[in-house]
Image (cartoon, rainbow, N blue to C red; front, side, top):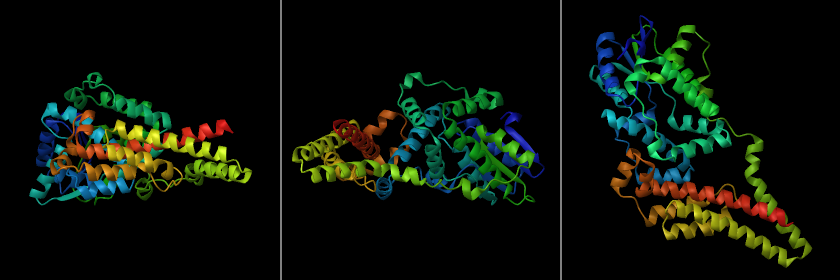
Length: 383
């Protein structure tokens, strides 16, 4: 590991920048623990990521059902897609993402050293990133991940680990691509990791193992003795504004308003038209979303039947029902659940039954949402 990836903050605090998919980083962890002889080993992991790595990234049926019920299917898919992209690079190195972090924890535990998990919960990070991204940024990221694998950028890990300027360029590219996501994934996490490191007893020798992309940011914060950020604020998902909470109810209110108006006017023809346009737009587009996810025919029918109803109640979602049916009629095997978080390409999400359940949930919801807007636009145009 080049000296540029080892930063000495003071005689009791050392930072080690690593690539989460590099064999050299695993060796660097062993070397630095032996040389620095720390009392504390801090690693860029949260409790959920640590548990996932230790358990072999297993997913059980109860967990899958919980993801559907809590509306987390898009977040889990996004997390899995990002991990798949990282894993495709890691395969060439013979390492799975996070191997050097697990090695650091393993060595520390064998030496009976204090271990600190200093990263923010991955779900909080993803939710904050998604919330801060603009609509066009979300589509840019989705389409970039759905792009042809042949267009993937070849990355020279050795060159990256030997040159901080390249790392800075990569971080700046992410911020240019999506300023909102860049702020959450880079700047916020730099601040969070730095403050968690500062919270460790300064009298103890601490080796902090972090991703090389965060090294400069953390170093700047620690070296400049910047005022502490509010960890509680960084660790929570910002509450939705009253306006954003009211938006999902606008279409139902519009539809019920039209229904009341036509009823008041005694126009049975307009009522039939309203019912037909609303039902067809919601049912067809929700079903198309489910079909794109390659859902079971019963899941497709469920999506079509549920969408016209759930679109009138923002507390419900057609994808929840379609995903539940998909889970029951095409139940993932133990092997599907075990392999889900180890998938290496986008196509694998359709062939894996657990991935397909999440795709059915997410794409049915997307189709249902589009269907509600299309129906509302059609009704508005017909007034």
